[in-house]
Image (cartoon, rainbow, N blue to C red; front, top):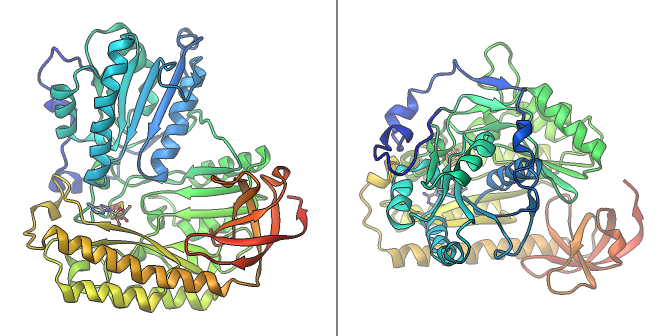
Length: 491
Ligand code: 5AD
Ligand code: SF4
């Protein structure tokens, strides 16, 4: 256990700053699964009549961690609020994947200082991926000393103890474990709505050279299939309509099981038989995407025909320097195999432009790959150097303006394909899971198709949480519009 306060100056032993050589020495041996988590009786009243507010940045993994943190706080008696002034605890669950995500958090800390001055009893905490970085913790210590609590991604289950300590200590409480081998199974989770996230694995061992995740989230460790399946069954019983299986690299699921050969395809084949209407998974890595998984996905049913398959670049040279461990040809072959097995599949992707030293020709190879695959949509990013990762040390002679222009050009090309694929849907009737009212117009409902398209249509609020048939009439780029057809399908 490593809990420290501000007056004890040597923090170095509490952090493992990103180090490729150290991280790659990871052993498999000590993954332990715990089923005995409990909040001690004397801590269950600590939050009585008090409120919490959590701001979450970054990926779905973080969103799901926030659900766990909320679950823990509610078991301690706290209630949720959206009003910062009412909050007794404000936590920032942070993302470290790009610099602008980090800048947002530091900006927010600047604003929160005033609240802390007005209400000194307020507990301000920072958790998530940024807290795993030594440089971030040092910056908070120096520039934002009013922060009360910092805890890491492997320390979420310790929150009740840390919170208690932060309340009674005058010093900043910091606990960031670099230990990463454990899985705590029975943490409470506060889920809302009709869709639920389910972790199937934690961490990442791929070490793409630009990426901070293998350092902030630790080594790959898979939850046991029986634990995942029990959770999905329970969610089905509770009436959830859709689950998203989560991992940084879900195709590596099961690789850490020493005593059995069991992968994502096997898991999906079992989840397929559970009575939950929709199942999705993210994020895939092309290198580990195997034939068995494709075969299982082709059975469809509750497995959706949408695959998010990050490519990052279309240039073999850049892919090599990113250490993605596949070539453009291998990626395109995989896409062809998937399209053959699931002809109506929708593919989406992640792309980084302006990787150190990326030439115009190499960027054009990304454009041609995008044209060849015809993605429905993509998340596109300008490369952002992350301290301690190998790419951050690579020479980069590409000016920022060039990178920005590449991003604009890439997005223009992607939009052409997004529009085309939407236009193909005109006149078709789609099954839509109704998620809520549209943001700008309460008379319009918003839902998702099987392929995760955002669909708007007019209808009564009572349809929220139900499946309906919608005939598509209009197809702007970022969503599609339609008309309700017939009765809602009861599910
Ligand atoms: N710079 C820019 N984009 C990044 N991503 C990960 N690391 C970086 C970085 N250093 C992108 C990748 C990944 C997505 C989640 O974020 O495209 O798939
Ligand atoms: Fe990061 Fe994904 Fe590569 Fe893992 S597979 S290192 S999470 S980009």
